[in-house]
Image (cartoon, rainbow, N blue to C red; front, top):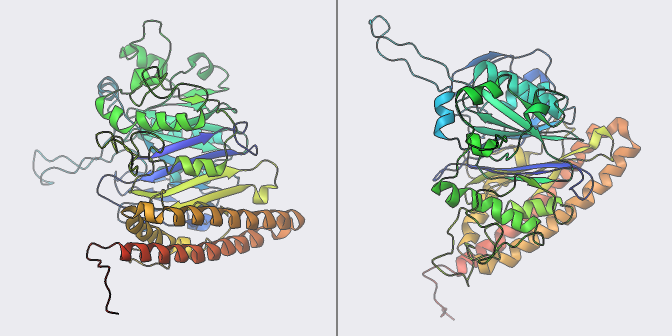
Length: 498
């Protein structure tokens, strides 16, 4: 999946929360409806079979309940995307990553192979199952982990046993820590703990730029990896550095022309946003440019980061740069040169915020939206629930404004070509919905603190209020956008019959 991920450590966030957010984007020319659901422990599969790779795995008999955001059309498997379990642990899977040829030759990806020939013929080759991948990760891991660190170890063991058919980045989060795991080749992996006062931008490119093997094979305080990673790198001559420092981006990743078009500009524009005063970002003396291969993996922001800023960042279309897709002033030769973060084919954005100053019963918020982030709003929902609101759960193939996914898709398609007419409506909608949502969350946080035994009931009640407000405001926005788009049709004519 062509995604963008943001990780925010607890000392880098405005309220001491850990925050993990990801745009799940589809491939070019495709769109994927999503829905927000709860997987109950009784409904979690005990025998799992991947649709894509055909791998079969027996699962433990003690799963926890969890939220997830699967595909609404179940023709390619579950694709749980992101969620939170009852231990207030979250994961998001995955950020598709790049890999260089040396790595893929040394440890090939474990891809599904169809059967060849007739069963009774001498040249028959049986079907070979592939490894695990984005379709599978949330289902295989999230119900069974009680900390972010445990998530790393659980997924790591599955990767070593079954392998994977794609390069992926996966985030695990609890109230104290965020861990980022990157798969390398078919069976290898490493994970790094995000520094508490740092944030991370991940744009479809293998990102970690320093790794401490001594820690990984010792105390494992901030680094963990597959058991034979050191020998694997040495035997295959994978490290090209003169000083033998471990820079995974250099050892396993890429810095190609397509990276400079598709990936590094996203890291550049968001670090430009969060560290505006820390570097020179533009002009001939810039410290970093959209083509830089050495943009840091993690860094301390200029100020603490809010959830609204994470949403703005994941809606970015290179505002205030020469590359803005919607700019009236940009040079046409530069405009829309790079792949926007807020792209047309985003399926869903999920931001999990785990708040340390609240009871476990309402500690986790899952901010949810669908479709192109330039034109939508991101709203928080409690995760201590047995049911999600229909407005976010009833997505199907049928186009209907009775669900949030299709309403957002329609608004974006209409507003895009009328951006400067509809921009003020979109901005007011985004501000109003978040203000109203924050009021509801504040009210119910206090109610839950005072009535902890009724927490789940109150969380579900709050979520229904949030969804009702969201539908009213989204319908109002659609009405305004449709009016402007209708007036601006190519066959419009100023004179009327009167």
